[in-house]
Image (cartoon, rainbow, N blue to C red):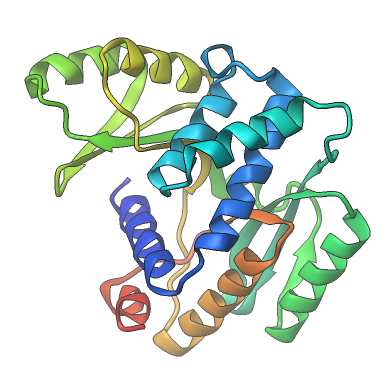
Amino acid sequence: MSGHSKWSKIKRKKGANDNKRSSIFTKIIKEIQVSVKLGGPDPDGNARLYAAIQSAKSSNMPKENIERAIKKASGSDATTYTELTYEAVTNGKVALVIECATDNTNRTVANIRHILGKYNGQLVNPGTNDFIFEQKGIISFPEPKISRDEWELEVIDAGAEDIELEDGMVTISTARENFGSLQKRLRELKIEIDSASLQRIPRVHKNLDLEDAKKAIKVIDLLEDDEDVQHVYHNLEMTEEIAGIYENE
């Protein structure tokens, strides 16, 4: 978890520094619309939608934008997005899993191939990278005012597998099947969730020297900037030196 948490913070800091709010909002709105299509417009009965709304709030998306996205997705004229997952390797054999939501699959795969090709990367057969990642629910929230013993016992009973507390923020991981029930328990405890999502956590990491790591990070950045790409997961080992690539930008 510690490596994953560090990567999350670096990404949040980078996003705040490079004025990507519009792109972030676009991806969150798309996630809200897909969630509504799949599970309905009620976040109390749709864990994926609830998580998307919490992500929107933590990104300071205006309430009216969230409500508009839910309403639009509930209409008969809403855009239909296809969810696709691609697997790839980039320079140094860093494994990638690229999750997309698109209304034009030909455009999406062409863009991904183009980005990978520029940096000696390529798509691989589905399932190639399966053994490298495991899917976990990752939930973050400010440290509750109630005693730590009290809330820790509650979240463990609800399925939390790992708990990390750093700089006043709690990050917990849970098995995919407990993701919804754990969020529900946090709501019952009146704990305001900052972010919640299903993520692919690497079981094994790839160590690269600084120059190769810079190339790998460039590919990840370009993929994440694509309008059809929702998430990019990788197994690059984020050493302090490599983390400095972000911190110094």
